[in-house]
Length: 620
Image (cartoon, rainbow, N blue to C red; front, side, top):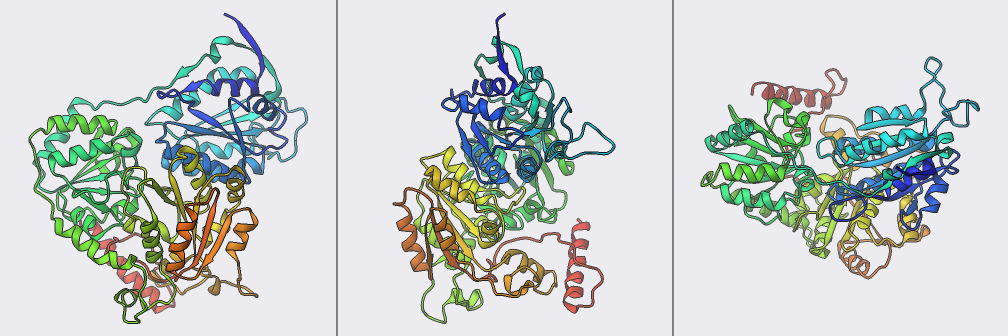
C-alpha cells in the first residue's frame, strides 16, 4: 500500500474534499475561516493550496460564519455541511453559541478551532487558557457539552480515526450534530506518511432506519383505536425528505396535521388537512384539534415546550402520545409510545398497516375561522381611523409586524424562503406565514438565537442559489450580529433583509408585562441611558455595501420589496413598527415562572394566574 507525505492540515483538507453524497456532491462544501496564530500557518496554507477544489470563505465573526454554515446544512436537509475554522482563544469560544445552536437543532457542522501546542514547549502561548489543576485542558474543552463528537488532534496520525468518526456523526440521522476537532497548532504543521487509500473518494449514503415490527404493530393498533388523532410534523419530516409521504399518509387516513416551527411548510398552507402551527405560537384551529386529540402522532419532533404548550396542550383524558423519531432519546420522551424509525419509512410502513382505515373528518370550520380572524391583521392599513384592524390592535399609528408580514407575503412567490430566528417575528411568522411548499420557511427556533438571521440568510442562499431569500429581523438581533451583511455584499450574495425597528426587545417586553413586570430594560426608552437612541439602520447597512432604504409605510414597503427583486446583492429595507401589538388569536400557555413574592400588585395577580395554570396542568 502506497503512502503520501502531507502535513496534518493538508491531510485533513484532502480527506474532506473526497467525502461525497449520494448525489455526487461533496458533503463538506468548503470552509469558513478567520485566521489567527492558531490556524493561519498550518490550516491556512493547506486551505490555500486546495482553494480551487475546496473553497474557503472569510467571515467577519466566528459565531456568525458558523451560523451561515449551519443554515446551509439545514436548508440542504442535512445532506451537506460546511467546515468552520478559527484560531485559539476568543476565536474558538466565539463559536460556542453556534455549536449549541447546531446541537439543539441536530444539524451537522464541522468546527475546527486551533488549539495549544501539543508539545507544550512554548506554553503558555498567546490566548492559552491555563487550568491550574489539569494540564490537558484548553479553551476548546468548552465545546464538549455542545458537540455530538469531540476530539483533540495531538498527533498527525489521529486523523486516520477522528475524521471518519466525524463524518459518521455528521451523516448519521440519529447522532447528527456538531463535530469539534480541536487541532493543536504545532500538529497542523507536522508531516506524516498517510496511506493513499485514506484519500480515496467515499460516498456517505443516507441511512434510513426501519421500524421494529412490534413497535410498528403497536402504533398501528393505537391509531386504529383512536377517534380523534392528530399528526405533529417536526423538522425530522423535512430532513427525512418525507413531506410527500406525510401528505399521502394524512390523506389516506384522513388525519389532520399541525406543524412545529421546524416542521412548518411540510404541507402547503392551504392543504385541507394542514391545520397550521401548533402550541405557544400556534393557531387556534391547530390547538383546538390538539386539545381534544386522543392520539398525538409526533413525526420527527422533539416535543419542545413551545410545541406542547409546556405540556398543557394535549389534555384529552387518556390520550396516547406516539413519537416517530430516528433517535431513541427523542422517541421515548414523556412516556411516548416509541416508533424509532426514519420518518419516510415509518409513514410508508404505517400506511400499509393501516390500509383502509380512516379517522373521522376534522372540522374544516376551525381552519376557516382562523383565517377569517387573522387575515385582516395582515392587510395593508386603510386610512379610516375606525378601521377594524386598528381597533383590534389598539389603534396603532405605526405599522404592525402583522402588516409587515402581509406585505412580504404579497410580494413573495413560489421560490421564496422566509427566514428568521428570534424575537417577535418567529411567533408572528409561525402563525401567519403561508408557506406554499416544503423548504419555503426556515426558522431557527430550537435555540432561538438572536444574530442568526443575516448569516443564516446567506447560508440559505448558498445552499439554494435559485431561491428568493427574505430575512426578517428585528433591530435587537441586527444590533447583535450584522457584520456578515458586509460578507454578503463582498461575495455578491443576493438576500432581502426586512428590518423591523421597534426600538428594543419588543417580544420580551411584552412577556415582561404579561408576567406582571414593569416595562424595564427591554425597550430603549425604558433602559438606562443618558442620550436617546438615534440609530440610522439604513445608513449603517449602506455603509457595508448594501442597497438600503428606510420606508415610512406599508405602501412604501411594498414598493421597496418590488425594487429588491431587481437587486444583484443584499437589499435592506428598514421600517419602524409598533412594539406592543401581537396577533391576539391562537397561541397557548407557556410556563414562565412568576415570582411568588413581590411588592407589586401586578406581579401577585400574575402569580395567582400562574398557579392556576400549574394546577390545571397537574390535574391532567
